Image 1 (spheres, rainbow, N blue to C red):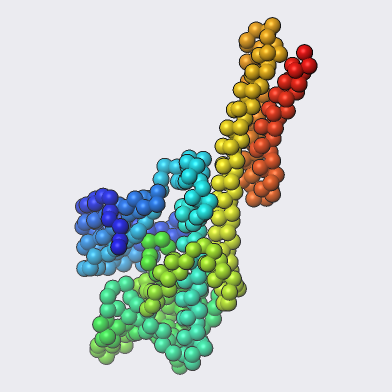
Image 2: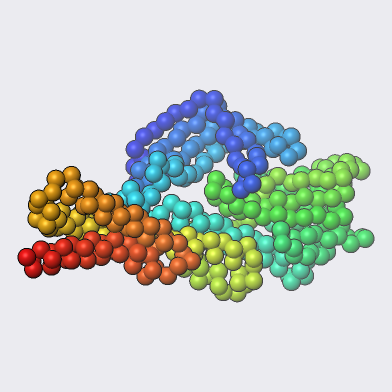
Length: 381
């Protein structure tokens, strides 16, 4: 059963924008009303929105389009003040995070990016196989509105790092037909084109951007010569079957195992996303281990500081209390500095974990050795 929301927030006159990873505005949306549901789940704040009476604005071509249906957005993660930083987590939370690092917000973000990279690679591969390996079959894309379909054919296609290149022939152009509820409405014929696939956190499936060059647009409902465009970009489409949603159900280890298999192990975008996920997961686990040892070492250093103060007060019983306090404070400060320096070493993935943990505990070792030396000298007298 779906969890119950903690809050319902109703907004009037809403502006909502989406940006790509480079910070560029992809499109912005205005809505008459937005119903936002706020959830508190597993230490995170999530929000989902339902936008009503939506008008899209595409900044690339300046076009506007209205959607009479409600648009659902999310769930989106609301960043916390401390963002699950291990230094702010309790001991039970640290132990839980160590068992389940996928719950960490940064690991979750990289896990989703790997799933997006796998889904985008699936779209490109299915697109290419349909056009080239399946003897120029028709590629069916789902439009942004219900009942919209785009049927694409091309004599040839080539893969490139950003997606696909559609190549037309002299008597067989790249052709796209727009159907609404099964009725052919328009046709686009072009000499060539490009296909770019990308996914973001606010899109449920990877979006397919088709851009055609040297285009002639025909109205299939009447006989006309059509309009010519040097370049035409189709609305954002998606694949007809869900590809991203099944991948999001896997944990990070399963996604990395999938990325190592055919045909993903040769895709640079997939491998880059996999390496970022592995690095983020390893870094988070190192932070947790360092934080656990730092807390244990700090508690142990407090005990040794008390023991050192006791033996120093007996050793220097003829001196002023400030002298005892000075030497005790000096050694305790040295131990604290060494402990926190060890945390920096332990969280650095370029060093072995044992080196950082050894530095963390070396402060306690110094206090222990000094306390033992003072006690031995005191015991002789």
